[in-house]
Image (cartoon, rainbow, N blue to C red; front, side):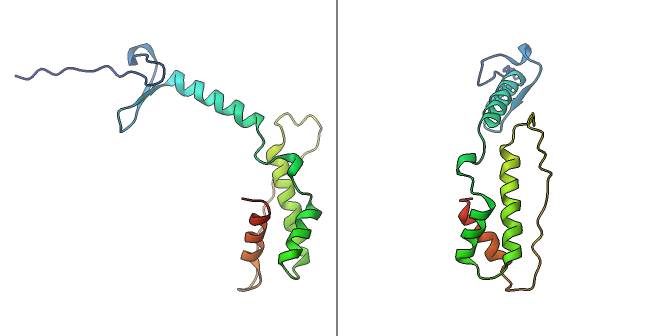
Length: 135
């Protein structure tokens, strides 16, 4: 006859046993985390992400500067370069904007669809833009 011992799971972060918390989540490697530690981690991440803009607003190039950089690499396509420059600028402004929106300015979500025949420069525009913005 074999005797089975049940080991109570313990949170790898705070050390609480599964009986002391509402939920215990386990990994394949045998590490566990309790719901309280998950909530604490989520609060920390939310605070850090709210305080830190993804792109430094002081270094954010204006639409004119973005277009001028695109002009250095791409010949023609002026309307596409202008549209993309404004769209990218608004995208980064939207990302950096605080949720309170106290200044009353609303930047609506928008999408850009690049259409054209093979070899017209769609990929070149996207790659050059990514290079300019270091993304």
